[in-house]
Amino acid sequence: MINDRRIRVIVGHYGSGKTEFAVNYVVNLSKLNKKVALADLDIVNPYFRSREKESILQEYGIKVISSNVKGLNSDLPAVTGEVLGPLQDKSYDVVLDVGGDSVGARSLVRYTEYFTSEDYDMFLVINGNRGETTSVEGVLKHIDSIEAVCQVRVTGIINNTHLLRHTTVEDVLRGQELCLKVSRKRNIPIKYVCAIEPIINRLPKDIEGSLFPIKMFMREDWM
Image (cartoon, rainbow, N blue to C red; front, side):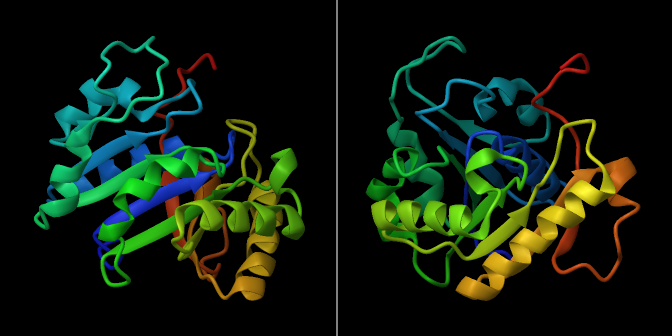
């Protein structure tokens, strides 16, 4: 994580686990004594928004930025200008949790001047069990649509193939094969392989990408 660029943009289809990854990522960053800001730019999907965990994240010293329309039940496509502060202040490590499709990616357009090649990464979270991203062609189409809108490139792939708490090692490895094919097609490295801890401890140690244990912040135990 420490070698990732200062601004991390997290995208992924609905159901990919994009927001869960983003929340876990900033918590891990904070444990490295980083000054961390998480901006919730998902103005499309009203479910599982990172801002819902603001109180928990603040306990880790993480600055959470979301809509200037307050209230968890507010569902308005509004983004606060406060996002610019951490983007401009290079003492911050910034994570942008973005709506995963081309519509959601439009929220990035106003910030692209800060996405210099040495200062940003855009990570695509892939769940190979989701209908739109079960094939190489589907993932490539997804990448193309996002890049066309925001005019910045995906720089890393996150294998987050899962079935929530029913995930098996075989699920993750099947997703890894998909991610490897996409990686080879587009020359985009696999950065992380995610899974809940009982599964991550059983994955091959030589798997491509860093193993990334996931704690379920976004889902209650009954979900």
